Amino acid sequence: MNSLKPVIRRAGAVSIAAASAVLLTACSAGQITQTSSQVAAVNGASVQTEDGSVTVHDITLVLEDNGDAALKFTASNQDYDRHEHALKSATVNGKPVTMSTPEPMAYNCSIVGDSAAGLQNMPQAENACIEYVKTSVDNDNFAYGGNVPVTFTFDSGTVEAMATVAAPTAKSGESDRQPEQKH
Image (cartoon, rainbow, N blue to C red; front, side, top):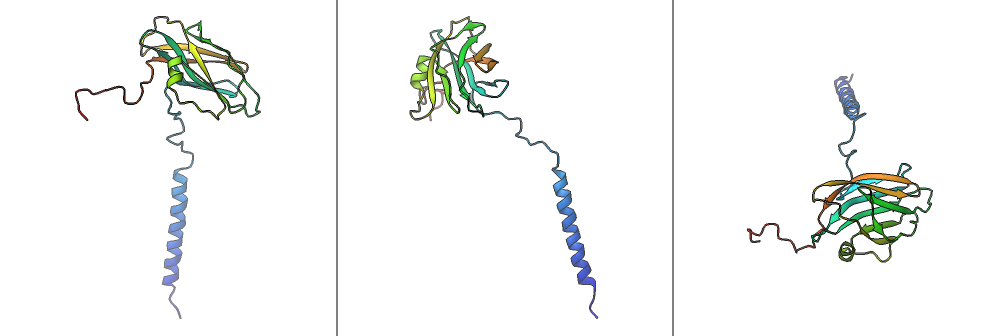
């Protein structure tokens, strides 16, 4: 007659393994991920129309050294129904943004707005569906680090954001942030 001890041991090991799997799985049930509320790593503010058809990212008021101001942004058509959408106007602190009227955006196309200098320094895609638009805004005593309300009006709705007033992005290698240290 064979001993039942090895069978009991195996059954016990299988039971413990099954119980461990159930308990470890239950520990994560209903938990919220740590990254679920993170936003894209772009400099400016981001908003979207109520129906989600148009998004606007990197909304920043760029203030040049000479006092000229421009609205920097990237608007994208995200409409799943693949309708065209048009940017009708933009205002900063209630004042109109001067820009040429961009063409309506087809699905997955974008409008990139910036100052003339900003667009000149920006690498531009030739084979992409992107329209580059020069913008300017009357300087309303803007100060670096401040925030100003920006409103974009599209054919599908109006969006509002608070844009930071910032200096233009320096070209790589042109700014010495630690002159006292030799590298």
